[in-house]
Image 1 (spheres, helix red, strand yellow):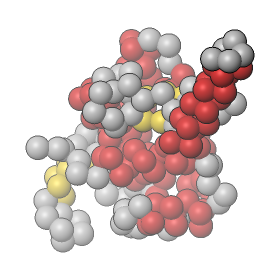
Image 2 (cartoon, helix red, strand yellow):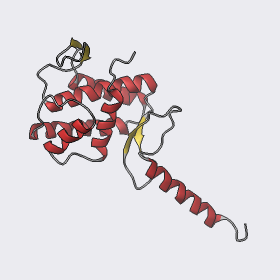
Image 3 (tube, one colour):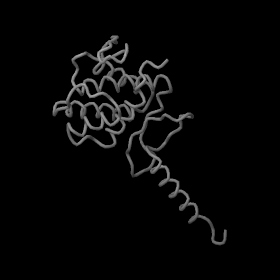
Image 4 (tube, helix red, strand yellow):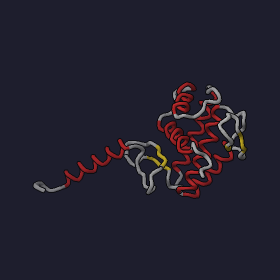
Length: 178
């Protein structure tokens, strides 16, 4: 049984925020709501600043060289952004677990929920399931949800662009008439 049924949605949100930083509080809140997450608090300038710092932590997490480095950073993020779990039915949807204070700000909710979701995903599927796009001119982040766990690109567009480039390079390398 998944501890957090929204984990995948939360992780898509944080990767989207990494690849397309929010333009301001309205954009941040709109993207949260568009993903189907409940908007319990309004987002303000302080939330944007906290999310900007949080995304810098995510960049360090993505760029960690070893699993041990990634785990250390993930533990730092859990200590900074999440709280001990509590059971709640604050919204009348049934009992569920929160890893944040009930009075958390918009950014406090986002950072706690996405950090716990990342910890669950990476410990359940492998620390290697987080990375940067293999396309040289793209630095996009991705979280690997694929079955085999061998994702290398942030999007299908980048994978296709790289495949076309490799194909064209191989065609040029072939002797004429082949």
